[in-house]
Amino acid sequence: MNKNILNKKQNALLVFIVCSALGFFSSTTIQASEGEHGKEEAHKDERVFMSDSMAQKMGVMTQSVQTGSLNITTTVYGNIVTDPASLSHVRARFDGMVTKVNANLGKKVKKGETLAVVESNESLKSYPVAAPFSGTVIARHANEGELSNGQVLFSIANYDDVWAQLKVFPQQLSDIAEQQSVQLSVAGSSLETTIQHILPSPDEKPYVLAYAKIANTSGQWPVGAAIKGLVTINKLDVAMMVPKASIQEFEGASVVFVKEGDEYRPVPVTLGQQDNYNIEVLSGLHIADVIVSQNSYLFKADLEKSEAGHDH
Image (cartoon, rainbow, N blue to C red; front, side):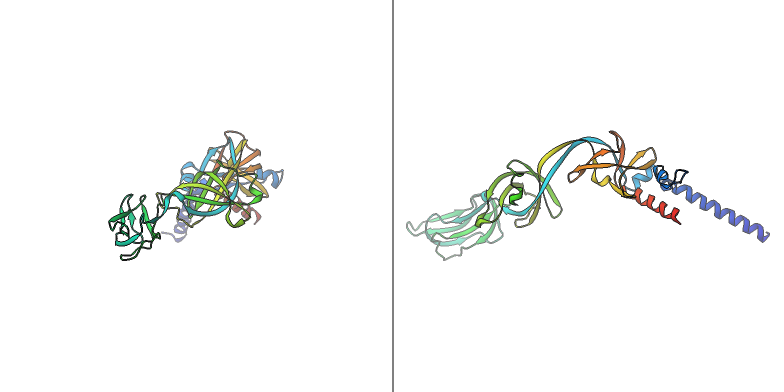
């Protein structure tokens, strides 16, 4: 075969492959042409094209713009402490000699289970020292042959319920009250609970202590752990709000990407108040507009890449 003909066929095949590849990736190609009105007008026509199947693969999520309420919060910090009702320091009822010890440090015991046996000094009869509730032995001070003499023999704790002890400083006192909702977080775990008590701090510290009870059967809230609390101090009704994750900064403006079929266009928005998850939109969008709520940075990156290409 003629060598020139062979080269022409190879070149044609290469063009076919390149075109096919471009067609495959057309779902993420940006069309950002500049018209006669200049660059500013051209930006209004920028679009990112992406099929629904590709958006799903890329983890893009959408939702409608809606009315709602913002939970305005203030932040407090503290620690997990033992529930006072779930900690017991066990003593012998009558003074005498410890003749038997059944529980060691770390043992899990049931309510009524015998921890030790004491021989009374008065009657010389033996009687059991029982666990007042189910829990874990966290301290042991009893050994066979020792005298009880009113001392603490065992300490037992039940950590199925614990408390968040939160420090509230003077500048926060006017905003925080009992029965307010508080979101607590520690080491990747979080939950919603309620402030039940506000008490003066010991030792004349410059804060008061707010207490919120936590169910801890999972053991994810260890005593002593440092925690963060977001106390809801106000609820603000807004006409429009979107997730904070949907907002991107593009060309000096806050934008939200609005979905119209397979097209995604950046829409500048004016923002208002916000909470930890959502932000108020004052203008730029309409109720029921479908916006990108997660991974909107992908569209921003494509637009910036297109702009960089035009600059060259």
